[in-house]
Image 1 (cartoon, rainbow, N blue to C red):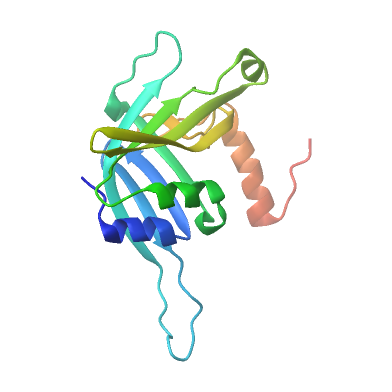
Image 2 (image 1 turned 90 degrees about the horizontal axis):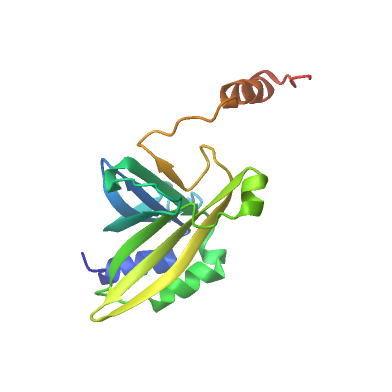
Length: 183
Protein backbone atom coordinates (compact mmCIF):
# COMPACT_ATOMS: atom_id res chain seq x y z
CA UNK A 1 0.00 0.00 0.00
CA UNK A 2 1.58 3.32 -1.03
CA UNK A 3 2.23 6.00 1.55
CA UNK A 4 -0.31 8.86 1.37
CA UNK A 5 0.18 12.53 2.31
CA UNK A 6 -1.54 12.22 5.69
CA UNK A 7 0.53 9.19 6.68
CA UNK A 8 3.72 10.97 5.59
CA UNK A 9 2.81 14.07 7.62
CA UNK A 10 2.11 11.82 10.63
CA UNK A 11 5.56 10.19 10.31
CA UNK A 12 7.23 13.60 10.09
CA UNK A 13 5.34 15.12 13.05
CA UNK A 14 5.09 12.09 15.36
CA UNK A 15 6.37 12.26 18.92
CA UNK A 16 6.84 8.48 18.90
CA UNK A 17 7.03 5.90 16.12
CA UNK A 18 6.35 2.19 16.68
CA UNK A 19 7.45 -0.50 14.24
CA UNK A 20 5.60 -3.78 14.69
CA UNK A 21 5.12 -7.16 13.04
CA UNK A 22 2.90 -9.92 14.43
CA UNK A 23 1.55 -13.05 12.79
CA UNK A 24 -1.98 -12.00 13.77
CA UNK A 25 -1.90 -8.42 12.42
CA UNK A 26 1.00 -8.24 9.95
CA UNK A 27 3.24 -5.19 9.77
CA UNK A 28 2.41 -1.64 10.80
CA UNK A 29 4.13 1.60 11.60
CA UNK A 30 2.30 3.61 14.25
CA UNK A 31 2.96 7.36 14.30
CA UNK A 32 1.71 8.92 17.55
CA UNK A 33 1.32 12.56 18.52
CA UNK A 34 1.25 12.98 22.29
CA UNK A 35 -1.65 14.79 23.94
CA UNK A 36 -1.02 18.45 24.68
CA UNK A 37 -1.57 19.60 28.28
CA UNK A 38 -5.20 20.28 29.20
CA UNK A 39 -6.18 23.94 29.11
CA UNK A 40 -9.39 25.89 29.69
CA UNK A 41 -9.78 26.16 25.90
CA UNK A 42 -8.98 22.45 25.38
CA UNK A 43 -9.97 20.52 28.52
CA UNK A 44 -10.09 17.20 26.61
CA UNK A 45 -6.72 16.75 24.94
CA UNK A 46 -6.04 13.36 23.47
CA UNK A 47 -3.24 11.35 21.97
CA UNK A 48 -3.65 10.55 18.27
CA UNK A 49 -2.13 7.59 16.42
CA UNK A 50 -2.02 7.05 12.67
CA UNK A 51 -1.59 3.38 11.72
CA UNK A 52 0.37 2.86 8.52
CA UNK A 53 0.11 -0.65 7.09
CA UNK A 54 3.22 -1.87 5.31
CA UNK A 55 4.99 -4.99 4.17
CA UNK A 56 7.39 -6.96 6.34
CA UNK A 57 10.37 -9.14 5.53
CA UNK A 58 12.45 -11.27 7.88
CA UNK A 59 15.94 -12.71 7.75
CA UNK A 60 17.66 -15.00 10.24
CA UNK A 61 21.46 -14.81 10.22
CA UNK A 62 22.24 -17.94 12.23
CA UNK A 63 23.69 -20.72 10.06
CA UNK A 64 21.16 -23.42 9.23
CA UNK A 65 18.24 -21.46 10.69
CA UNK A 66 15.02 -21.45 8.72
CA UNK A 67 12.07 -19.55 10.11
CA UNK A 68 8.83 -18.94 8.29
CA UNK A 69 7.42 -15.43 8.15
CA UNK A 70 4.50 -15.92 10.56
CA UNK A 71 6.77 -17.48 13.20
CA UNK A 72 8.36 -14.25 14.36
CA UNK A 73 7.39 -11.07 16.18
CA UNK A 74 9.18 -7.77 15.63
CA UNK A 75 8.89 -4.65 17.77
CA UNK A 76 10.83 -1.45 18.17
CA UNK A 77 9.99 2.12 19.09
CA UNK A 78 11.51 5.56 18.73
CA UNK A 79 10.14 7.26 21.85
CA UNK A 80 11.32 10.81 21.10
CA UNK A 81 11.07 10.91 17.32
CA UNK A 82 11.27 14.72 17.14
CA UNK A 83 14.66 14.56 18.89
CA UNK A 84 16.09 11.71 16.80
CA UNK A 85 18.03 13.22 13.88
CA UNK A 86 18.30 9.86 12.11
CA UNK A 87 14.52 9.42 12.14
CA UNK A 88 13.87 13.02 11.09
CA UNK A 89 16.18 12.51 8.10
CA UNK A 90 14.39 9.31 7.08
CA UNK A 91 10.97 10.94 7.40
CA UNK A 92 12.08 13.95 5.31
CA UNK A 93 13.36 11.69 2.51
CA UNK A 94 10.13 9.68 2.24
CA UNK A 95 7.59 10.77 -0.37
CA UNK A 96 3.89 10.15 -1.01
CA UNK A 97 3.52 6.99 -3.08
CA UNK A 98 6.50 5.19 -1.50
CA UNK A 99 5.78 1.54 -0.71
CA UNK A 100 7.25 0.74 2.71
CA UNK A 101 8.70 -2.55 3.94
CA UNK A 102 10.05 -3.26 7.43
CA UNK A 103 13.14 -5.49 7.13
CA UNK A 104 13.72 -7.36 10.38
CA UNK A 105 17.14 -9.01 10.69
CA UNK A 106 17.55 -11.41 13.58
CA UNK A 107 21.16 -11.95 14.74
CA UNK A 108 22.46 -9.56 12.06
CA UNK A 109 24.89 -7.93 14.49
CA UNK A 110 26.36 -11.07 16.05
CA UNK A 111 30.08 -11.64 16.35
CA UNK A 112 32.33 -14.00 18.33
CA UNK A 113 33.07 -11.21 20.83
CA UNK A 114 29.34 -10.50 21.38
CA UNK A 115 28.66 -14.23 21.69
CA UNK A 116 31.35 -14.58 24.37
CA UNK A 117 29.71 -11.73 26.29
CA UNK A 118 26.32 -13.47 26.02
CA UNK A 119 24.89 -10.84 23.66
CA UNK A 120 23.09 -10.97 20.33
CA UNK A 121 22.29 -8.24 17.81
CA UNK A 122 19.15 -7.56 15.76
CA UNK A 123 18.57 -4.86 13.17
CA UNK A 124 15.55 -3.09 11.67
CA UNK A 125 15.69 -1.40 8.30
CA UNK A 126 13.01 0.53 6.42
CA UNK A 127 12.82 0.04 2.69
CA UNK A 128 11.01 2.64 0.55
CA UNK A 129 10.25 1.50 -2.98
CA UNK A 130 9.70 4.39 -5.38
CA UNK A 131 9.05 3.25 -8.95
CA UNK A 132 12.15 1.37 -10.10
CA UNK A 133 14.23 2.69 -7.23
CA UNK A 134 14.60 1.48 -3.66
CA UNK A 135 15.89 3.44 -0.66
CA UNK A 136 17.00 1.43 2.37
CA UNK A 137 17.40 3.11 5.77
CA UNK A 138 18.92 1.68 8.93
CA UNK A 139 16.31 2.48 11.59
CA UNK A 140 17.42 0.80 14.82
CA UNK A 141 19.66 -1.89 16.27
CA UNK A 142 19.44 -4.00 19.38
CA UNK A 143 22.58 -5.38 21.01
CA UNK A 144 22.04 -7.11 24.32
CA UNK A 145 21.03 -10.39 25.95
CA UNK A 146 18.76 -12.85 24.19
CA UNK A 147 15.75 -11.88 26.30
CA UNK A 148 12.24 -10.49 26.12
CA UNK A 149 13.72 -7.10 25.22
CA UNK A 150 15.24 -8.19 21.91
CA UNK A 151 13.87 -6.66 18.75
CA UNK A 152 13.03 -9.84 16.79
CA UNK A 153 11.62 -12.83 18.65
CA UNK A 154 10.54 -16.28 17.53
CA UNK A 155 6.82 -16.97 18.02
CA UNK A 156 3.99 -14.65 18.91
CA UNK A 157 4.79 -14.79 22.63
CA UNK A 158 8.40 -14.74 23.71
CA UNK A 159 9.62 -17.46 26.04
CA UNK A 160 11.46 -15.97 29.00
CA UNK A 161 15.08 -17.06 29.31
CA UNK A 162 15.92 -19.47 32.12
CA UNK A 163 16.14 -17.76 35.49
CA UNK A 164 14.20 -14.66 34.41
CA UNK A 165 11.11 -15.56 36.46
CA UNK A 166 13.10 -15.34 39.70
CA UNK A 167 14.70 -12.08 38.58
CA UNK A 168 11.31 -10.54 37.69
CA UNK A 169 9.85 -11.76 41.00
CA UNK A 170 12.70 -10.02 42.83
CA UNK A 171 12.08 -6.80 40.89
CA UNK A 172 8.38 -6.96 41.74
CA UNK A 173 9.29 -7.10 45.43
CA UNK A 174 11.39 -3.96 45.00
CA UNK A 175 8.77 -2.06 42.99
CA UNK A 176 5.61 -3.15 44.78
CA UNK A 177 6.73 -3.89 48.32
CA UNK A 178 9.78 -1.64 48.51
CA UNK A 179 11.95 -4.61 49.54
CA UNK A 180 15.41 -5.11 48.11
CA UNK A 181 16.28 -8.81 47.57
CA UNK A 182 19.45 -9.60 49.51
CA UNK A 183 21.96 -12.10 48.19
